[in-house]
Image 1 (cartoon, rainbow, N blue to C red):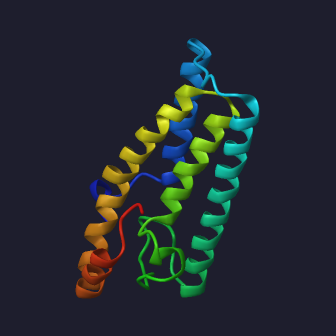
Image 2: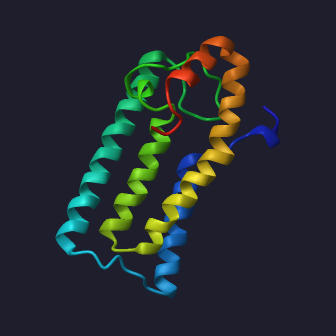
Image 3: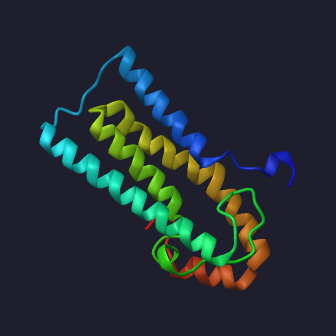
Length: 152
């Protein structure tokens, strides 16, 4: 695949957003002003949910014998399991993980970076993946797009 068509690796985008939020918080602390018990409960729930969703999605990739690498060659179109609810459960999981960390770190900056991560994933990764999947799977992919939302 030509370099200009390659997507950045989603975990690196996640890490960049986490570090940007943490760095902004270091320079100018900005908490959530939420009670600790609420922050911790929501943060743990988001982290647990994101890990469960990511594990389910990775198991689906493995079960179908295809790769989760956005630049890899897809050998199957995943449409069931977590992919029956969201076309991008791994990216949804990364976003929820960042939100959970923002809550646990009491960092409004990290929470604000969730929107940046979603935007980066949507424009730099998902848009390119969708072009490749349309070209490879044609009508089957179009039917899937009509049935399942991108982020859900």
